[in-house]
Length: 125
Image (cartoon, rainbow, N blue to C red):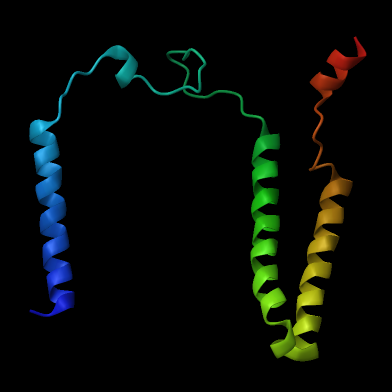
């Protein structure tokens, strides 16, 4: 039998079989705590679907992704710097200059502000 054909037949059949066994044999004892939404340790407010969310955490996550990808792109260039010659080095240098300019603009716009105004007020009191 062809290996690819076996993969497309055997894997779905095995997955359905294991899911069926799980549904039949697993203990099902729901209670209020299991059925409620996980609220990160906060007591849920019933009837309210929206809550306040500080955009600062979202910005930090986006900045982390951008600079994490920068490091991901730095690694192959560091390994192949002798093979890519001066052209590859100049392309990498332009890439990092553009990212550095973006980082400076983010700091200038105040997107990266690690101390919030509430913490400053607490420290001043």
